[in-house]
Image 1 (cartoon, rainbow, N blue to C red):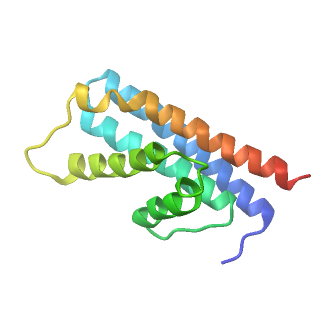
Image 2 (image 1 turned 45 degrees about the horizontal axis):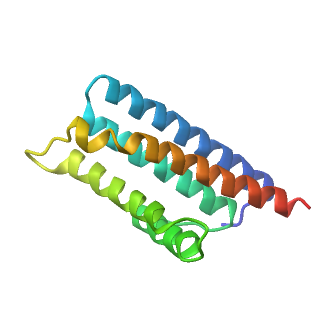
Amino acid sequence: MQLTDEERKAIVIYRLEKADDAYVEAKDCASLGHWNLAANRLYYAAYYASSAVLISAGHAAKTHDGTIGMIGQHYVRTGVLSGEDGTLLARLQNMRHTGDYDDFLDWKKEDVEPYLPKVEAFIEKLKGVIYSNSSAQSR
């Protein structure tokens, strides 16, 4: 499905808002000691921001794994994002899946808390990519 420029911009804005909201939810869950939920929300914060950057560039992934793969292909391999950024998204997906579905595993503060500033920086980096691309396109 082809999107108009206005539709694409609206979806990108919406996904970035969802990323910011999920990040706030992660911090709230962390403050209450709900580490599995915090890991879940951190993943979704990074995922929504990742899908926003892909959509902003005209890419569309149908799955979460597809999103991670396209981030690697279009942004990590090209040097726009670091390998650490690509690894972060994959690690968060694994943490979310493990925390949501694995029996007898609960994330602890020391497992999840270090990811709070990393996800915040990741979201801001992706916003920078989106805004630098949109300002370059409007020239």
